[in-house]
Image 1 (cartoon, rainbow, N blue to C red):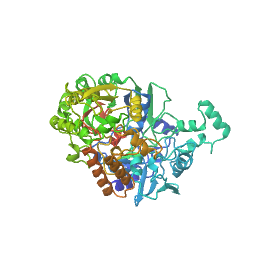
Image 2 (tube, one colour; image 1 turned 120 degrees about the vertical axis):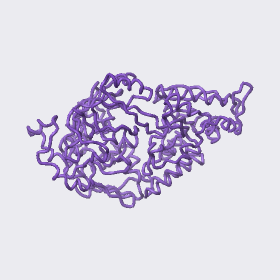
Image 3 (cartoon, rainbow, N blue to C red; image 1 turned 90 degrees about the vertical axis):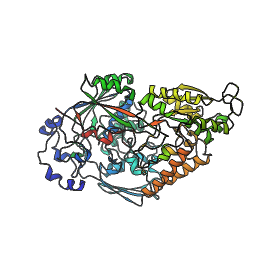
Image 4 (spheres, rainbow, N blue to C red; image 1 turned 60 degrees about the vertical axis):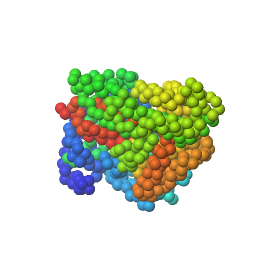
Length: 622
């Protein structure tokens, strides 16, 4: 279908194709070329009918409300313009690229679209990839740690080639299955920069006097800091930086309101040849997160899910009677709404030994009454289970989903008895060193997470454990568990609840210091042994070995087999303790906003929140 549509592109679109009203005057005056000259020779054609959507009309401003200046990155996540993207079936397909070829899982040839342009009209070419790789990624001043991990296999970067003006090639000695998914990520692996713009900030290309003047004008530390700030694509704070996203920022920070205007050179069209996006302007207003539900209910946002919770649903649904909004219920896409992570690297030697006993972790899981959590906070609409992949994942297995997740306090007590945690005369269990078994749960969540923690405190208290809850700021919590000060912390579950074999199983193995269940092991892996502690628990070591096998796997079937082995170990060993998943997520839209699905999965990865559902195809009825 796609090939057929591409072949018929110029037959379907007349030379005087419809221009969006917001740029029609610019086209008429000659400030912008007509649409036929702005698009690639072969644009990406979006078949609305195949997506359950309708072709739309141009116009309107889509309003968003955010709470933090960093939330400007949501425009990049929602816009979801990537070299390759996940489609609705979670397959990787070309987007900015016209096509790509993979040989032996280690040789990747990327083909650009002829005539594709940056938002300022400059051509997108292989030079943009060469500049990033040779002048940024391999530049020891700009990239002191070298290329990102996604670009390394066994610590070695690829060989980079410019094949021709529109073709580049990356070759590793071994397969790199992480490469393509990293390009499609919600926070993508950017392997290109607009070289024509960025060279003015690079000492290799810029006039020294002009560069020094720019450093002084921007009050930057040096040219390195200036280049870094000017090059940010994920957080589009620089309005002058050309983009390939559907909308380009026009507002300099700091600001209370950011305005994004359509990219007149965006590479997607509908089947009738009309250039996307349909909506010409997106405004992002900053507010306080605790009043965003109220503002949304009063009709101040046209597309809102961020900062909304399930317990806002009743209020929002009631607001549809008095304001022009609709409320949809999507599903949260994480492996667990709240997951409890015993810190296997805690500094307390006695607790560390206990946490490393699988019987203790299983007992904690069996003691949680997940049905009570589900009924009390989610009206029974959530799914009760372990922290694993969701039922909508091709890797789903009921055995993983329900591993040690049934409510069985009798078995939980027996497990604790079996590892020698006996009760004293007051019913409190006693540690091997004679201390009462006091657990502190640390968390940095919202009200809903606080409520779940309180229930779990009761469940674990019934086992004879003294359990306390202590909230922290997020940054402080991370510092505490990495330092070994935390016993148990609370986070959302697997970020890739809808995992596919081709997505990295990195959350199932100790690979990063930000993992609360084994931060020092993760730091050791991430730093190649320069920091942290080596993994010394057999099951965790097996997971790490399997992950390393995935990193050099050649086929999807090999990766599926590795994922399944890792999920089996991870859930049976209860390295994290899940509660409920598939929690309903309110999505509020303007009553006239079209093409927003009634049902969807709201998750950072792999769906990029709204990104997978393509906001550039949303449109307003008159």
